[in-house]
Length: 66
Image 1: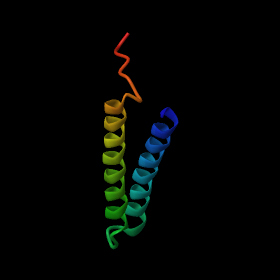
Image 2: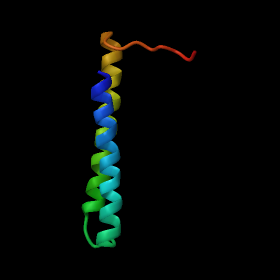
Image 3: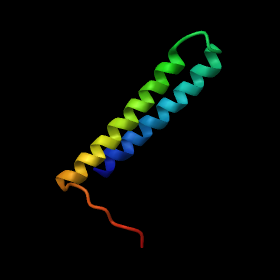
Image 4: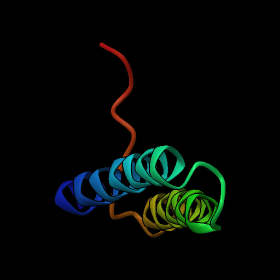
């Protein structure tokens, strides 16, 4: 599960980076920036729902602050 979450975070950061790249390259003339940011939001929501479902099914447990 830790590997899956790490990969999801890397994909979210990559989507944010591609949105920045498209913003600088296209200068607002295309929808690629909006599409990249929408993908980032979708990935973030999906990751949240997967973590929530994993907690409910008992696959992951909170550890607390030590």
